[in-house]
Image (tube, rainbow, N blue to C red; front, side):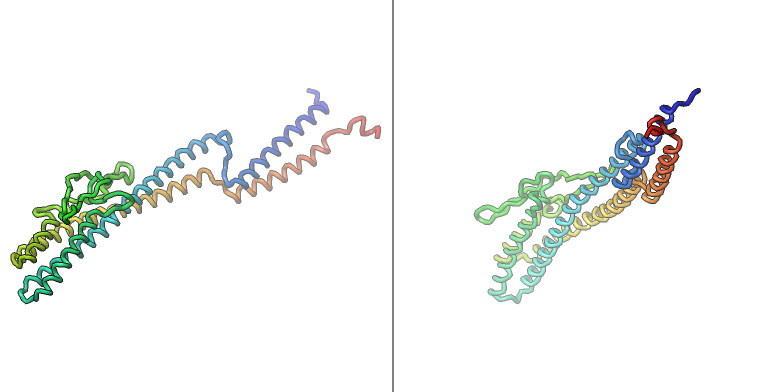
Length: 294
């Protein structure tokens, strides 16, 4: 086959174009830090990247869910701690009132503090976090305890539905503590406090009030222990999600991110080849008649 000057020129231009394209590819990798800039560059890497990215997004969503559960549990634990302190103080007042050596002024002071603690317990039962009443089951828009104009307390802990949030694949965790488990019972906690106040006013049956207050304290402690177990489990789930996030991020990086040392080496090599091709091409192409006529 006869090789013409035109064939040599066309082949040289085609090869130089391919060489430029290779250099451009390595330059884009260095600029973007990614192996590919569009799916057609490497469909396999692109498809794997979609899967790895979806896994990372899923893990991040579960982490946001665990943050929501943490918010519920931390605020609930804080409220239960305050309720325990208030009930323990009421017990101290009951024991003090039961010793029979208190003056009228001292009994009046105990009565006044008991009423204040009753109001404090009402506030605790109506703890509102981000617009949600955390002790009223899934009925988070309604306070479970109300006080009428005469200061009488009405409680409604009938909504015992659990607030359940998915914290990992196939794992759902109860975020709340049912108000009935904490403030309910026979008698319920507020009735026990009312009975104590009434007994203080009448100066009798303080022993019975001590027993009812002790039962209320035990209810709160049991609820807090159950909450603590769930908080420990949540911590384990958070640790596992953190590890999954690290693995997913590393896998995605291995799949998509460019090896800069390798890319720089390939770019330098390709640049050298390009220069050699330009030099060789200038020698291979024969001078034309016009060059001789100059």
